[in-house]
Amino acid sequence: MTEPVPEARFSIETPATPGAIGVIALHSEDLDAALARLGIGAVGVGQVALRDLLGVDRGLVARWSETRADLMAHGGIGVMRRLRSELIEHGCREGMPDPRQRYPEAQSEVEARMLEAMAGAASERAIDLLLAQPGRWAGVPEDAPDESLVPGDHLGRLLTPALVVVAGRANIGKSTLVNALSGRGVSVVADEAGTTRDHVGVMLELDGLVVRCLDLPGLVAGGRAPDARAQELALEMACAADLALLCGDSAQEPPTPEEIGVPASRSLRLGLRSDLGEPAWGAEHTVCAPEGRGVSALARLVRQRLVPDAALNDPRPWRFWVDDPG
Image (cartoon, rainbow, N blue to C red; front, side, top):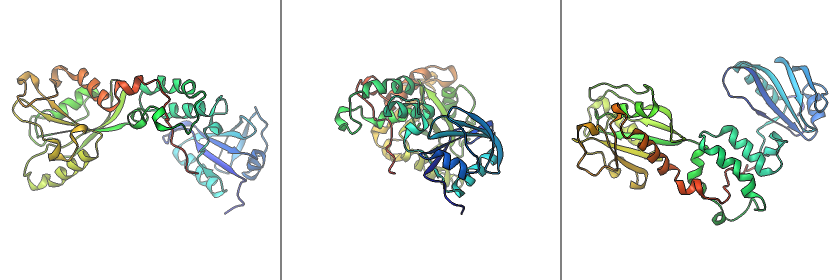
């Protein structure tokens, strides 16, 4: 390994997909020495220079402050991987645990954390809530007791999508429901039992909340041998879900929470194909997916189960970050 760069850390700021430009943030308390050791050379604060980037590419180096510079290379996946490898080879550590290093324009630690969280937040409902946090944390210590804060177990789903599974017997319209919720065809639909032989996953936005949704293969009691593994995987996915939509129709009652191994508090009994008649088994909600009836209301219901209105409207501060262990 080459001689280490003094106390330098880096963070890849652009997605891991092909693009015109890839950006790598570089931070060091002795940034001049770090740039020299990397063979980039001196760049003054507020200046931008075209430089060789570790023998991988030629690109721009923008110096934002005494301790922060951005390396801007061609955004191909191969280029970015090689730059990452070279930085690690030169002794740079990946990751910037202090958000102020990434957002020097922030007026406070909480504002820096807020900007960092907004950059990766999955759901649009997170934005206004995050923007309010610097004001709510003003004068409140970061180690404030949990009882003085909004519980984060629900609000965290605004940042990292929850897992929702659609479970039920075969051939009752589960895939049609997922397609209706997504607004596009994402699940195979046919009037034949067992059409979905494996789980089909899609990201859905439900009432401003993004979730990971899995359309599970139909649960068949005593399923045929070819379906055994699919049945096993379906139950495993259901057990891991934040919310299981247990689906039935007017003729078939949905599986029970006990049958698929989820607590009743993490399940919702949903009646499909309501155009054929209302179910007699006590559905919590009914829909007719082909006609769109009840679909918007279901989206709101799922969002409220995962992120209740009480949590969204709670005026207390929210600890929306995870402290770096060092």
